[in-house]
Image (cartoon, helix red, strand yellow):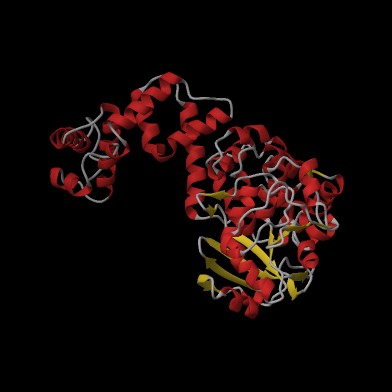
Length: 455
């Protein structure tokens, strides 16, 4: 379906472009259309002059249809995806007069990147794709029809194109109407779509939650039927998509969708109580994917000791795994605090200082907030003592200089000094040496009526 919407109101003086008015899409305001014209109009007209089409596609068209302010301070908040019937070598020549930079690493897949003025463009030749059953990597054929390109998109709300400079909306699958109705559908049969690219099942959760769209029954049924196909997707790609999903403001609707279709069980792996995961509690945590992952695992009954095995399946970065485990550990330690005990607070700070705030946020999301008195004493330890001071006041060389300890005994001495520091608070070097020598003398003195076990 192609629609041309007449411009409402008086024409606009386009100055050097010599245009007095342009046909417009119904969801474009005059101001947004003018700003887009200023940013990309010249490039688009160079394609038209050469006999080629130039379509904005994907997220920018969807967000414009939703009325989002995608333009800020004279530049776009995001890069622009473009599709065209021009081939990569032609794209390269057409953008060259306007581009500060051109990158063509994706040319064999039909994509040329260019920075033109204040905007980065990813311009791709119309594509049609074929998938093999055991792979989500498509065989790509170039096409001359924009509808071929739109049909391979994941959802109808992403399968709209806006031609520039005519400002004609190409919407063959009813994406604009689906946005208005709050419906999530695929451009083709969802079974074919999810068979081609199983990762789209995770994206369905992100779009259902992020844009408050209700999946149609066929889409949900396809997710149930094809959940197991997610096994052909690399764990890295699954982890990346889940981090995007858990970063949105309100993911609970999507978590529930993944949970009831069986997709979530494929994501988190065997041995987890997926049925116990509580989407509302995950959403209650701040919109940070690391913290949200900790909340997901916590509601599934996974603690800090078991979390590494669960996270290993995602193949995230070492820092990501360390942070999730650290948040779970901090939450466990804070939850176990009982009263405003400064010694216990020091132990918590020593074990989990980097993740204390996130641990407290996790507990709050789970409905078990840290009591004010306990958080106050922990915060006081952090502010007045700091984690760096919560260590042995002497190092190994100083221990050996103050005693004749060697080998394993040095480690025992350092452990004793750390325990003394936690119990008594900060110690000067002289104080630490005094208590160490007293401890060492007692250790070296044989017990009465007992042979010296060291001899």
